[in-house]
Image 1 (cartoon, rainbow over the protein chains, first blue to last red):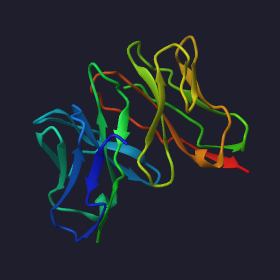
Image 2: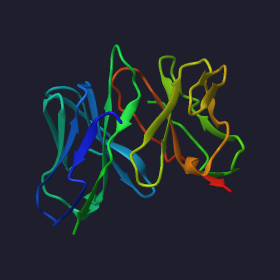
Image 3: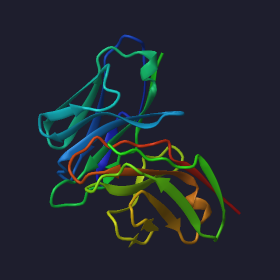
Length: 114
Length: 110
């Protein structure tokens, strides 16, 4: 357990509404990641962060934005949710220089957009 | 980023060794090989990683070929709880756009 929590764990929302998912870590890790997982596609990287206010796009970033105003929180926002964004979202952390480089994943958020 | 290829699925008898192969022929010199697994709908779990030497921990062993173009994850005595999707990936130790492939679905059979 790497001290990662995700909230909410489950959410149902309507098309066109904004949605924010939160990833919280308690161990001060530098790198944080957001992935989505869909049947037939495995895990796909949405955005990642390499420090406070330092973020970059992953392979499926369209329709998503992120923010990291403090080390422990990495927020993923769907500005206007679409049905194609129905998925399971996983947050992950990685320690970085001076530490280990394996990723540790949160429990996931199941999002349904109707 | 180097890509990986893995068999889609494999079966293994309970108590026997499970050997999961991965090809990463475009791996670069500073990229590590990582293995993760995902049990049902849980978040992926780190298993092991290595650069060029074979590695062993309490969960598994990792065998990397001398040319580093392929590797094998070995679960020495598979149990039913090892039934999961196993992902092989390559990544630098710096922050990186880590790419997961579709993985291998391992079924451990009683």
